[in-house]
Image 1: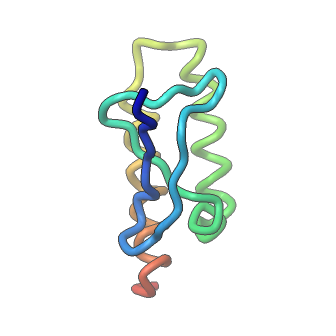
Image 2: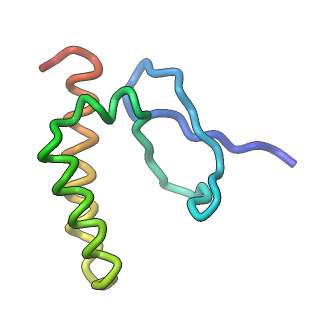
Length: 84
């Protein structure tokens, strides 16, 4: 049985994660480690959390979650490699 690991989305970061209860890894998944997630501004993280909670009630609108995730990921990458 091979162990699948998911690397942090920030280039150069060596952190990885595996399967978690209730959150198994799947194809196309992305992840930002805790160190880099903290670099994302708090209001942006709060918006992401709020939209993600609302998406549970409206599963036909995944585009909003994807958009805010892309913004958060971009912010983590830019701050993680020192562009901001």
